[in-house]
Image (cartoon, rainbow, N blue to C red; front, side):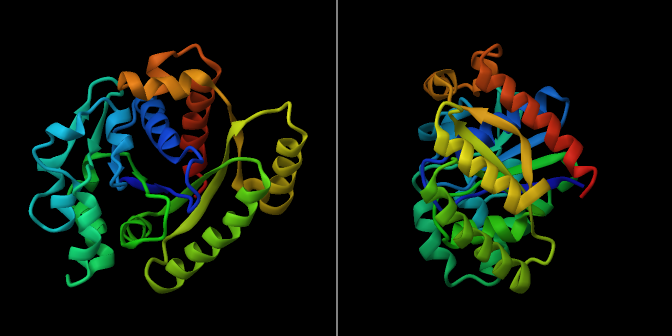
Length: 256
């Protein structure tokens, strides 16, 4: 049975997609069978995995609306060595079309259940908003990984996200829990970063991952080459950090 995790944060530009793609690649290097689910209409995770979203035969859009299944729509990331359920701009229209469908919050969960036995991990890259798409991701998942920058505004948005997760847990998915907070784009030279990092550790305790992802230009360059940062420059600090994060994830789920 696959462990299904959402990578979510209502704030944009906090490294959700970078985290989802590189965690998928890191887990694949640890011989885990991984499916990366791109639930964002921008399709950045799809492109970051080296897949051309303009040439897709089918995508998660068709899967959510029942016109295709996951086995048909998934594509292999040759650079990352994991499977991808890809997305493109068509997905933006799914929100409106799903409103009239039965069991609309559980469409993704039902679709992923068919291929559950084929994977060790499924990672869902959620859009930066609490939408019907994000709700589908949260209803399908066992837990949420929250990437966040160590800055003041990030703390403000975090309380909103935690409240959202509590509501989904109470009403739609009792399996859902926060797996951990991942500090990303971390700059140790900034006093504020260190202060916010300490606050997170004090408030959330062992929910904060030990691994810290530093600001790293190689991670930012990798998507333009259609590769996860781990594969683009394995020796970079960012790649090494995501590899360590993958190993920490494997260890953490043993205690869940």
